[in-house]
Length: 265
Image (cartoon, rainbow, N blue to C red; front, side, top):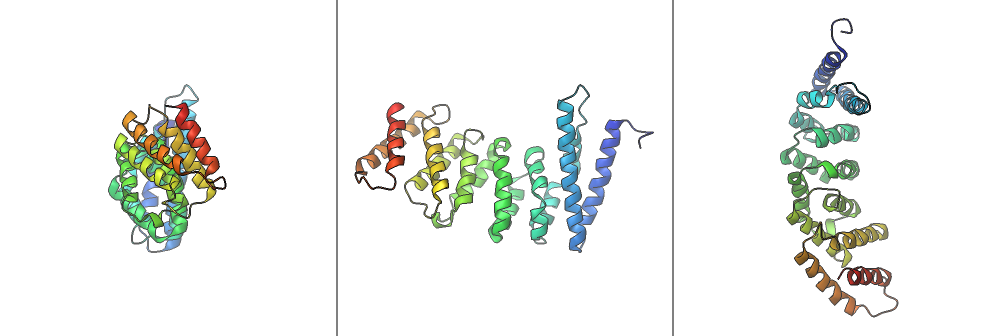
């Protein structure tokens, strides 16, 4: 291959060979072979990312490894094997690099994401791993997928929302993501419920983060419409009037909230 092909073509042919082997292994009934397939795909994803970064830092033409890999990997099939009926925790734990590649480079659909989401519901350890990947990729997710995920949270009981769920909502509705205005308003509504104590059981660290990020968003006209901003101001003023106890556990946060709102009137 080195004698016949250019470095660019050799790299593309190598990717095709690796993906072909990996997809065959992934269909095996033997878990160890399926694990080997995930390792091989994950390694290929990392190599494609590294080659793209190297191309940015040099004067050489881009190898387009990520584009080639994205065209070869059959997203529904890979996701179905890893997160579907034949799912296994050892496959899921090794698939985070693949999932990140799909989120950033491939046409992952709500159907694919729904399969991943259902898998999260059955395994808490997998949920933590997968949510971290989605949160890390939130700045690159299309509005459609962000809306799909946030819509999931509008249909669950507030008692079922935990720390990792709230952290994911913060990332998807934050300043560095690209939700539609309607979806961002939905995330603000969930954050407001957390601040009001309607979502019980959150850690103090997560509660504080929700509080400060909500204040940051609600006082930023670039991200929030004036009508939405005024509506939350009204609700906040009513809450502030009710806070009178000097021993209130929310007193420090309330003072900050009062200062934020008064400064941005």
